[in-house]
Length: 382
Image (cartoon, rainbow, N blue to C red):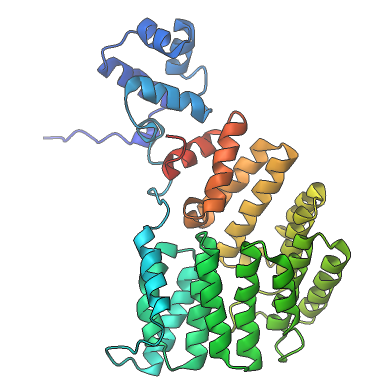
């Protein structure tokens, strides 16, 4: 006996799904139209696919009348919903940072710890933030007593906490990284990178600038020094000092141009395209929105753009979405957010800054269908 094929929800047009769900509720087209405040003709055109449903606000109104979640209408077109990580995960990391004198209860070899740190960096660069939060407490124990690995673990901890809107806790982890580095030039430099990121997240741009410049002259690794100049340039832009920001980013560009290969042992992602992205962000901070957009478009055409980790690219796409929104280009802003979600969903779905931007976008006017589906997946506007 032939079994009936299960219909693919995504293959059913949105209008037809509305018609089916309306019929299940026992509502006529006229009754449905009256509850929506629309005409019967409007409902008929929607259900026949003549009129497109591409505004999330309208989809939400329909869902309210049908007494269901908008996601049921939109369908599982995006990856499974990923909301903000469980606050308990951040609390566990906070507790781990508070007990930094704790010694591991089981022995972990140096090779095992090194592999765990490498895996944590990979998780970060692919924006697996919830998974990373869960792993960090054990990793802090596993790397305790191995200076270089512990600095890396504190760096990862600070970086992910900045992402998740916990800058004060991030600053604590970053400060621990500097203390653990104990004056080693390269380790101190890499630790200071996350110090500046945390301070910038706290809007302490003057302090971030001072911190970055205090170590740019130490060590002989151009990727670390170049990244510190990038952070200093962004901090200067945050203070409104246009000339200093440009000078510092020029220093970074000089170091990037000297690179002849692409190894990244310190996980900085530094290079010419990183400088271009920083110039775009600095222009935005300085109020030069058109320049920010132009520099973004130029940077993503660079041959090294795709070499950047998904986290880095998605984070920049979110920044560019903000710039496009500031120019009034809602369509382009929406496209950038959807593109970022495709690269690294947690960048859009976990980060408070991205979720705020998504909310603003849906409130500013008609949102493209892709943004409507993303908004539903992120559980905003419900």
